[in-house]
Length: 599
Image: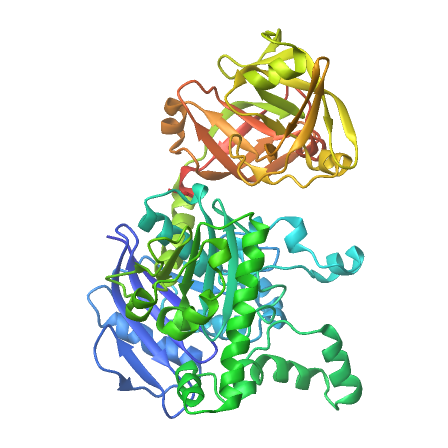
């Protein structure tokens, strides 16, 4: 048993849990609500609430730690894990909390004023009382480090954006990752096989598009102010409104920040951010509350529809957070008009839905629904503790190094038997030009021409032997030459991908789909995977030590099969950026404890 104290603080509330990360299992729950008010109260496990007097989050943490100290696990804590909302570009994973890292987090406070400041107060209080054990920061923004550039960047001058760190970071990452794992477990599938729209709806609210295990879009941006209507935050507005407030409304910078962050959203529309009270008043005829509910649901539904388009479809829509878990009315309103996606709500299941730590996930979709709808019990504390344990394990785990060849995958085509016949003639046999490292595969003498809406690429190598399905792998640069938008996918995953016309010496074939940009990956045999402590579909960070420079590739997918040989594959764009050339090899250094498992 390794108990870790997870500290999850908001601007006026604190949630703590002692987690046995080896199980994992929750051993103790503490919640302190309405901090700094006369209504402040503390909940310990399922016992009745009791009054609690604390002026700020730091004082609340001190009280919570005293409660932990009186428990059976108080003297056995191995670490404290802190949820930090904004990690900026500096932190893409958990980090030990020391003076340098705390200073960087403090510098990010203006980007998340409601969250980073109280979190740092909680860190200071916890370090004073539990300074003899490690403290680890787990960042909300880290899960969204996989956002593609098109979703990450704003359309402003790059020089300005780079100087000031202006980009979309995304938030609620720990919650969205928990939803991803929960629905995968509930469906018996791997996250790599699912397109999930995760709706975290609470006082803070965001939607994330999780495509095959990676966050590819999310509604919050540079700060937690963008996106959905929230408890006190406005969400999406025209930037010109800010200018108008300052030029003509008599607002200075601080007043604008208070208005948009603390006095807008549900509270600005109705005077309260308590959705239960708003729903009750709406039922009694309060028009302001009716508008607030309609606006909240409309914005959320709009994002769900947009993200289904971004991913080319959706397999699961999940609701979590205080509103997502507890408001059947809001789930009903958001799910309205989604039948065209194949998402059909079962109204009886929706009204009866109840989730808890004992029943963490329940389905609310109708039997005929092609898209499965779930309610997921929010649990940020367990993944926070587990991520912290992973970082501590990494520090104590020896680095395993292995010499790995690097293969640069130039654009190429895998053709079916029928496509070979159409392009080169009936019964034509591809001629091996170069045998590849992967068993039985070869680069053929034959080449083809790719033709897209904008342009054409000649002399594209065909790889053999023929496959059951046609697939073309190109680079990002090739996309712009051809004029198509190819998603980053694992080889073989060609659903909802664009097509292309292929010309050969005997004819042409127009593929309806099958064009991808290959996701960087490492091939290995089962024995190699066992030796390195890895599994198929794990995501790893791979360090390559080259002569000119040391490089690190993140979000590398592990592919395990009996006929695979150990080899890392990158495309030409990645190789050019890294200064790699055919025949290069590097020292692959992998810590098994640092893998991001998708199982």
